[in-house]
Each structure stands twice: as C-alpha cells, then as structure tokens.
Amino acid sequence: MSEIPGDLKFLKSHEWARVEDDGLVRVGISDHAQDQLGDLVYVELPEVGSAVKAGTGAAVVESVKAASDIYSPVSGEVVEVNELLNDKPETINEDAFGEGWIFLVRPSDRAELDELLDANDYEELVENEDH
Amino acid sequence: MTEKTILNATHRALGARMVDFGGWDMPINYGSQIEEHHAVRRDAGMFDVSHMTVVDLHGARTREFLRHLLANNIDKLKVHGKALYSCMLDERGGVIDDLIVYYLGEEFFRLVVNAGTRAKDLAWIERRAKAFDVQVKERPEFAMIAVQGPNARAKVLGLLHEVDRPRIEKLGKFSAAAAQGPHGMPLFVARTGYTGEDGFEIIVPAEHAIALWEALAAAGVAPAGLGARDTLRLEAGMNLYGQDMNESVTPWEANLGWTVALDEGRDFIGRAALEQQKAAGVPRTMVGLVLDDKGVLRHGQKVLTANGEGEILSGSFAPTLNKAVAFARIPVGEPGDVRVDIRGREVPVRLVKYPFVRDGKPCEGI
Image 1 (spheres, rainbow over the protein chains, first blue to last red):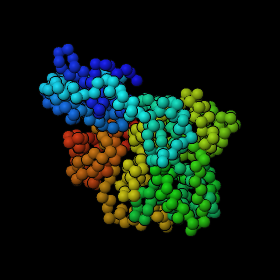
Image 2: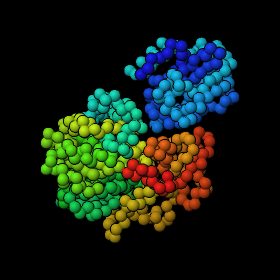
Image 3: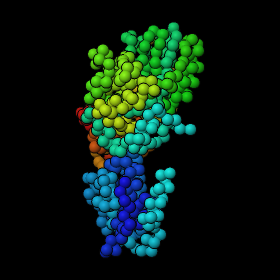
Image 4: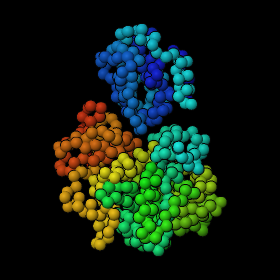
C-alpha cells in the first residue's frame, strides 16, 4: 500500500482533505479505504455549487461489494468534482491520494480543519484496525 | 467459532482478503475481484468450495427416500455418476435448501448442500431417513475445488493420470466420475459448476487438497474468491440460497419451477402445498433486471411496478456486462415501467429474461 502523504488530514471514516495553495480543500478516500472496498465501479459525485456539511454524506462510492457514503471533512460549497471518475471509477483504486480525488470544497469554517486527524494519527488508526 | 478449510493458510499466503461466509473464514478476493471474474470468463479460475457439505446416503431404500425428500425426481438419474439439481422443501413448499445429488450406486447417492444450511439440512434429512433405513453420513474429510472457465477442463485433464484422461474428457455435463490426480491422489470429478462456464467441481480428500491447488496453479489456473463466484453465478442466472430463496418462498416464486417434477403418484415433501399454490395462483414472480444507467442494484432495494412493490434479491455490478444486473421478486401481472429506489432516487430498469451471460458472452437482449 502507498505511503500516506504528510500534508493530508483525515476523518476516522477514511476520507482525506488537502488544503490547496488557493485555500480550497480537496477531498478523497484513503488508500486503505479503497483497498477495503475493493474494485470501485461507480461514484456518485455531489453537484457543483451544492453545500456540504462536515461529517455528513456528500458523495457515494460503490464497489462490486457495497455502497459507501463519503463524508465531507469540512463544511462549505462544492466548487469542482472529479469528472474523470464518471468513466473511470477505478482511478480511486489506482491512485487514491492523487488522481482519484473526489471533490473540491470552498470551506466556510477553516477551524474545522483542526478537528481532523493528521497523517500520523491516521496511520495509527489504520494499524490498530488491522489488528 | 469460525471454521477454516484445509486451504486457509494457502489463501492467506496468496494475500487473500478473508471474510466470514456462513460461519467459514473464506477468501472474498486475492486482489481484484473483477480480474478474477474475467479470468474465469476468459481462461480458467479456481475456487475453494470446501465449506460446502458432502453428505453420503447409503441403504437399499435410498432411491425411494430421495423420491420423498426432493422436489425434483431422482428417477431422472439412471446412469452411474449422473447428477441432478433439486430443491429440498418443507411441508409448506418453502425451500429448505437447494442441492446437487449424484447417483453413485443403487444403494449409494451423494448430496452436496450449502455450508450455511448444514446443520438444519442434516437434522431434516436424518429425521426423515430413519423411516427408510437410510444411513446419513457427512464427509467432512473431503475438500472441494471448483475449476471453471473455457480452458478449465483442459487444464484439469493435463493433471490426471493418463489412463483416466480420455474417460474424463468425455464426461458429459452434470456427470461425475472417479479419477487419479497428481501423485495418484483419488479425485471425484464432476462436470458441474456455479459460474455459467464449463469446468469441473472436484472433491478431494483434505490431505491432498493443497497439492491439488498448487498443481492447478502451476497449470495456470487463477485463484478466484467468493466475490467473483457471486458475480459469475448472478450473471449466469443461478440462485443463491438465503438471498434469492428460503423457507418463506416456494420454487414457483424463485424461478425454480423447472426443478420441480410433478410426476404422477410421487409423494414428495411440500408437493401438496405447491399444487395448492399453483391452483390458487402464485402471487409473486422472480425476474431479471438490467440497469442501463450508472449505479449499482443491490440486495434489499425496493422495486416499483404497476402492481405494487417488490424487492431486489441478488444484485451487483456485472463485470462481463459493465453494468448492474439483479434478480427481483415482484407481484405477478403486467409490471409496466419498472423502477428501483436507489437511495431515494427512482431509477428506471429493464425487465429481461436471464441468464445474463452464458459461455463468456452477454445473452441476447441484455
């Protein structure tokens, strides 16, 4: 499994958030999460312009096995979605922390970012889950 | 407690993701479920199905007993080694289990039943076998490996003792025979399966199962998990016990009418209830659904028809078709435009005749 990039923040439910240079927050699921889900076959993306709330469902990913809600790590407005996933949902399996990002949020409350786990805490969480 | 097959460590060494399946610790995939699915459709794959239960029946009145126990007619089996698929019903016509029965001798028949139903099946069979003086013997010392795909038979044949090859090569569909495998190990080779592809299901003494698995792998047979087995059998239009039928459903309502033999004068368990339901009108029917749009049909989703609501039984993304398909049980009658409720959204689906896939290719109209 690939290294967890140090600049990411995480929800316990395995979503990652990356604060971009322009202050927008990019969201995806962790490599561990995609590995648990197995081959992804469909991603239900949020609508651009819609409002998301921290810790509540914003998207859905479906593997052959099951459907899973994707929670937004921060509240705000969706400004972009990863259209590539409409045709190639398996991009998440291949590159969960990069090309497989899901949506981009303009955060309304940057303090919410401080509530998230950092990469080390998340790594520990995953390790404990595996045992 | 979770049970393990003899191949458990082999699966783990291959990096399998293990899940609990009917009380057994089984591999769901070894990496990519979709690749394993394609390996079976295009070449050859193997499944550890040792969790399934082998039950041998012995006694002079075994055939008579099976005439009573099974909804299909055991007298269809006239040739040694022939197999029959049947439901075992309760008095109300509900499905206790579906199984395969092999004819191995006038006083010897072999059943292969589901893992999740093992205890209730054995209790049911034993209770009724007594009156027929039939001995019921579970065979936990056997493992079972299913080898499936267009190249599966050739790859298995290459591992058999050469004196056995011509005979096993000629083995007809739904027939079984004994043969010698690698290192002379004794095999029971059946030309049956649960994928819609040609192939064999091989019963092997547990102590030889790892050697057989490794020989198959060396012959180029890809390990495949229960995840791929599920999408393969769904595409092939085959029911899964517990999901597509159970005691609350009759064979008429599970598209299993073809397995019920209402031959004159045979008094099998559940017959009266089945005849009564048929006369009164069967209220529900099982149909195939295809979702042409994006999304995935799943077990438990609500199906909306002109005659009322039904529900999805087995549903999944179908890798061969690259879209979702499902079985659903809906009220009888002209259903009109059928929709499925996916997370509160009503999505139109097409009602189709299944199987969805046979011998590697999508069926017409899918």
